[in-house]
Length: 220
Image 1: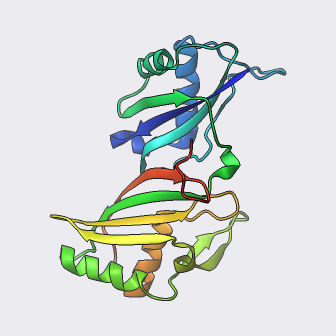
Image 2: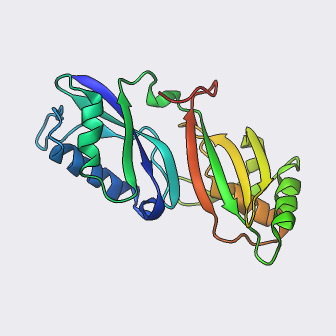
């Protein structure tokens, strides 16, 4: 059994494919690519395939990990090429290598958000964001695992942020917790900013461009 970690991108219209459908798509692709797959045992054998940090619906992913197990060694560049022959539009495998870190090592994720506040200029939007994110507390309601809601101080979980004006939108960069114990979605940050400013945000473009361990080393 040989563990391999693949990295892929999920962009464009593919960002609206649910994680369940991505899982089905990948399972179908690895079979059609004729990789030497390791199958689980039991009544319903299937290829071992896991995602260390599943991507939320609507978020673009630039370097998403997927773990497979093979029963024999093969050229990994060839494996990537074969898989890309069975991918839907806007989903593409980038690389593959033996995993160095474990899924439990994931602690942070970096995001880039392109947004603009309704009825306001780019400069005004940047000022709203900078002011809100510089406050000592910034609260929003987060759904609990039991289906309820609880108020959380989002600001205390933001490791870093930056706000930059572009031609027709504001670029907000965030580094947020992404581990098993604490996980903050960037939409929760926008909700907290809306609560603080009273200004509604236009539908943003959300991009996850990095996954890291506790030391901010890229997940490998």
